[in-house]
Length: 327
Image (cartoon, rainbow, N blue to C red; front, side, top):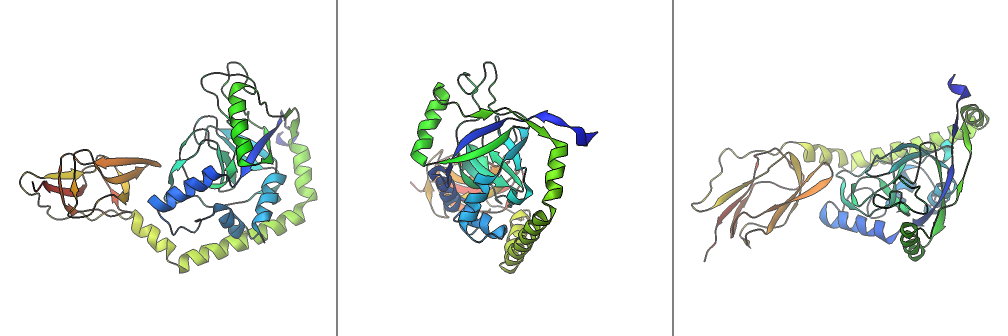
């Protein structure tokens, strides 16, 4: 029976640089290149506070560091990335994800998406709301110290992640030390008992219900504020297929620039009348959380721009018309 389940469950103590400069940089890049008016900008931690009905950002800090995060999945956001949720439902902060997603996230940033926490295994795109940054959870080329020989994974299923605070400079030192084998996180052996956990939930049912009621009320208020501000209308407009011109005129010697795959337009780098060189970035597309630059196939002048940020395009959709250079 499920209630008799007992599994190995180590407690892994990991450093967390709260509101780390690398996460701040990722938010700044997002605001500069994707959108600067998102409800989670300019500070994800304040957004987490608001949608969970907490009184201050210190309450977010206290909740994250008090929690034990049970690892339920590995590899969700690339290489060894754990998906974990707090054992105590009163520590289970919830968020929405970025929409559109970020195109850059620093390696080992720590974020919350839905009710789950994740450590990004490598640098890349992402959508979880940041709380900080930690040390590596993946060692693909050589295992030593914290990484068992032959295994690139730091964490296992049913491990419990327990955070302790460090400042940003100390984290950089620890990140260097864990790859060389000089830093090994403290790991305590233990077990997870389903029967004991169910008893814990029953003993704390009233306070858990109070926490969830407050959280749901705050989340509903946030959603109502988004609707009043036109957030949902903006999202619907962004997801609508781009209108294709009935006829596109390409001047003699010019070129029509088309999308090579289905994506959304998230950034324009030129304006009508701009002179461009061959290979110069014209605009950026986003698909599957990855940014792809569209480059000028020739030197020329931007005659017409046929797409705008937020447009959904398909392979072959006309994006831009280039005319021959004027000299």
